[in-house]
Image (tube, rainbow, N blue to C red; front, side):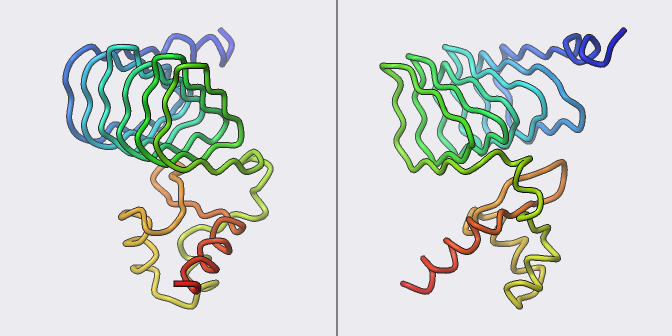
Length: 173
């Protein structure tokens, strides 16, 4: 059985109401059709079904939205908003597709593919040294959404270009 076939078999279809943090280390095909409140950290594909209501910050690879999301979305590979999608929050993705009828209330940042930016990516320790602040500040800022960041597994990652833009914006205040 090929690695791709094993990935295709890891399917989780959630129709219930859930609350908390869902985090996956291995790729999985996750579809949420019910209500979810909390945080989603996924690898593989994530589908927010047409009848789903999600209040969460989402970090994932390939994300398809048919339902309603309130929260920020970071898609490392692509984000697709179908015609009935309604997103209230900021999105960061290298590839974005929005069908006619979809609603986005928030900001969108489209940068080059995350995998192409590895040389321009900091971990929390590197960013603390770059900004000359304590690592605890970096982690607090990332957890609160004050600084542009995305999760890779359990670790925060920071794109240098986005950090430099954030610094310029903060200095202008």
